[in-house]
Image (cartoon, rainbow, N blue to C red; front, side):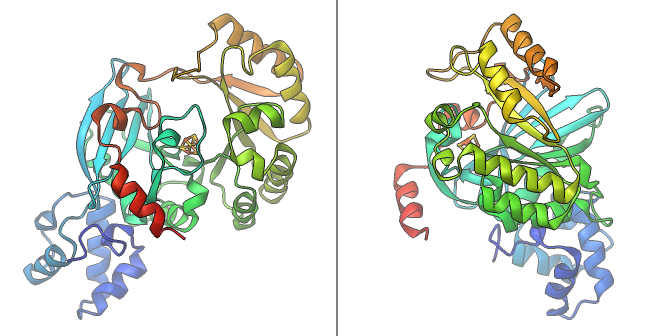
Length: 362
Ligand code: SF4
């Protein structure tokens, strides 16, 4: 049984499902039915696919076990309606996703890797180390499992952000394949502008993404206005310093004519001064962009600035012609920041697993 493995049905586009079923002698319309059950009706059990013949249901059960390649093992709801989900994977690793409801829409922030190799110092996931990439099926299944589990009175999922655990561009193919499945007319039928990919700044992949010329939103984590400070919290900056990163961002906007969103985690006494805001405005001058100011979720050694200081920072940017907004704080009572629930739950990968996976990675 390929249950939860790389070739799980949940990670295949409809043509690939058709190809897989054709090997067993099933016609294409059966594949389309299966795809609809998986991604439109989001059933969690093959036996619920009641317009399929019994032998096909038996085959799917035997080969794939479940329509989902990961299972919700824990969920916590915040007083503000945010829900954090912990997913169990086939190899006993865990990842997280966060559902953020707003008046007329629901956003799910999904994970793309178990852990992360980027080692950003303010990030709970970065601190837990890298284990492995998620498969397309494991990414898609986070979304489908949440869609199936959401109570009907909650805003349905209308937006997906690749901003959970892991660096999306370090798992480029699986992320783009998942985005394609979300867009399928026979499935969720999500518009490209309702999908956002967030990167810590992998320059070659930003250029590769730009060349795809999609309408998918791009968010880039900046977090500091100069190389010294950015390198001190984001080791990736030593490989791709700010100048190279911003060149790639300009390339992206020129190829797509799309605005980039720069994520800027505001940390007390580190990057939140009047001068820092001015420096940031200077390096972003003439860029088609928006700055998303994120008062940092307190983790060891990083404190959130006072609200008045956050507002001042925003005003300085705006005065220099840079569009900016402050991200509303959500779900702090349920450890909604990236990687926190997993740590609290004690399901971070065992050091033995971690060592083994690391030694197996190229
Ligand atoms: S912030 Fe993102 S890229 Fe950085 S360590 Fe955390 S998950 Fe990885």
